[in-house]
Length: 178
Image (cartoon, rainbow, N blue to C red; front, top):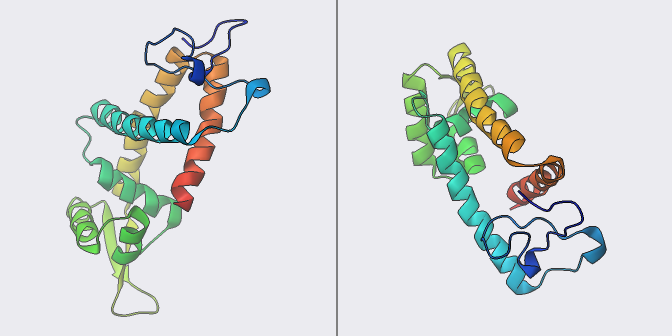
């Protein structure tokens, strides 16, 4: 798992473990060089593939949950940001308003969200979490985050976990700004 004592895990040299194709670890600070265009493209390809794999693993970890990944994302956004309109939620989740409407309808039918009049625009309604929606979201988070935390504890050493923590903040910035 990663570089051992005295080893340098440099992706550009194939990393620790040779050509296994797994995580090769970060370039150490004293060897830091700006990545080339090809390396950035390769990293983008790997992030895309890993995002898909992570989504599948999270879906597997929460099989039997009462909400889908997209429904959980909407519940989470409502929990973090408070009540929102269908259009606001669609824009934030980068889906069409019609798709968001279908997701919200399913959540409303399940009693996880509720509608209320918009305080300043009678043409709109605000969607917000119900107590049951908050309970379901807590359960989904516990299951999915528990799987991730266990994988980090069992699959990575201290240095690698520190790299993941730092990378998460950088990836979040890319997603939020993009």
